[in-house]
Image (cartoon, rainbow, N blue to C red):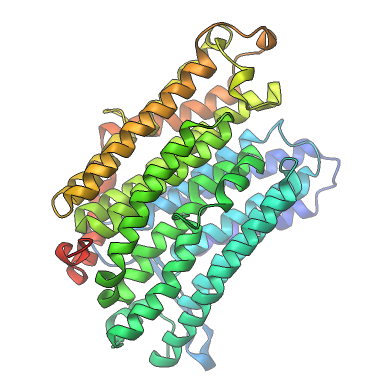
Length: 491
């Protein structure tokens, strides 16, 4: 019941806010905070009651949905989805609090869309029925597009439309592939499909492509990434936190949940291309980030590189690489979410994101500067912080089966350190730009958000087994279906 409750809480909360008078801004804000905080509290028992060493689904709920078509309501979690659900409830609360003063127009609708987005994303991560999953997948598109299109920057409509077109194009093929599976098996239940499907290799190759295309658009994997920098640049701060923090993970998670177990014979066929595109994405994202003059665009292109790293671990590192990929999904959500939040803090005061408008501001905002540097260290992968653990395990798993891919991935980390530390120098250090003389340091609300984010970065970095003990059984089960040697690009 707890998983259904996590979906229902934000939906019911959105309905409650819909009946609040539009001019009651404070009531709307506090209701949104209370609802998202309640969802976070309800999600915590998932971690504490999760049984380590168990590879199957836990907290399962199975109910009839459309009995005449043998389509059911089936939800559950395992080590692949547990931390993504927790990440979603945590980052939604962070996003709502970060919007406290940033959103003044249409606050009521804004909070409603944030809550509906949370419900849809949680639905994606817990669904174990193909059509239920597809329903939530498509449902997540609407509130995100509206958040960008209504509360974004000058080119917000263009960014929202581009986001919709890209996502819908991929989703259409996925729906066709899901229908093919349903017709072949007579059911849309994922565990049943995985255990009973007996498709030819050629059909698996075709269906894997249809699913993987939708997932690759969402990641986004090079060259399907062009919607992301635009969406991030135009989205409000909270929209960028949710987009980078959890929506992109829908793609990488779905590779592991659906594409690999449903089409094991197709993985060896497609993995060389996916690994190649992941490496290109890592290097391309890093090199383009190096030449950006906009802080938010730099962080957006860093996401292209970091998500490429997750795809690399998924398709070239066997069980170890997959575990690293799941870990890195969480890490990227925390570190990049924090970077987008901090960029938003600056933008709210200065209304510019250009490097040339900053410089030497650490003397004015030392608390902000400290958190910014810690967020950069987390994103770069400094030992002791969360980013190091995920990247190291991905590289370790990849190197044992594909040294060239691991070497190129390592070079991508060097480039990431280059562009992120360069960004820190341009914004925080050097001669002081007098245009920033009225800058104020972080208030208690902003510092509290940053502290909560960096705290989890340190906890994961210092105690990674808090996650790996729950992740590893699920990835080990996947590895039994697909051996590590099968996933080596070019072999």
